[in-house]
Length: 252
Image (cartoon, rainbow, N blue to C red; front, side):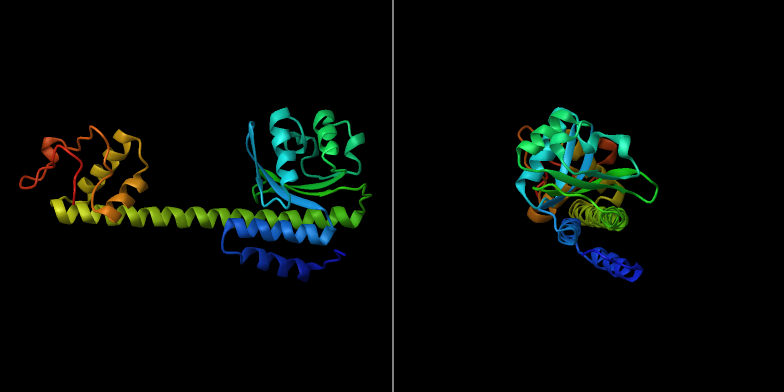
């Protein structure tokens, strides 16, 4: 079912990288691996910290529960570095002794077999794994392992590219929003660019509001967010001589 040559994987890589958002990229990855392996469930698991696993694009709520239990128990495939660089196979979780508690609880949920492969960056950093699950016992072939290993490399590249692009777009959007807010302050209060940014930055820090949120609110409402007991002032040396800031949030 999953006989592929180099051209197939090249076309697959192009398809995965054409998805417009990280969520859609992950969904395409999971949908494809599930179909090719005829799996009952599939998902991407990303280890955010020792205490948190994020389940991405699960095909069933039970897969999220499997990852949640890994976090609670502190054991399971995502926390096990012993299979680093390899494709993980478990034909019968009820008989697996590597993670006895997690495996027993997983089997109790009706999941019997597992095939997983690491997702690593081009630098070799492990970012998580992609897993396929079966409710019945499955004997894995060398073709299964080879497909999963190659597919995981393409999936990891597509995911990291998508995440990087999303982060870049967010950063560019944030810069644009802050720039627009600076322009409002500069026009209405006679500030230069540096002083306008300082107003936004100080307001953000003093009131524990994200800088982008302060800027967006200013653009939308022409005033800074209203907070009880707020006094927004620049140091005397920085105040424009003809338009001093009020003792309350600036209303523009």
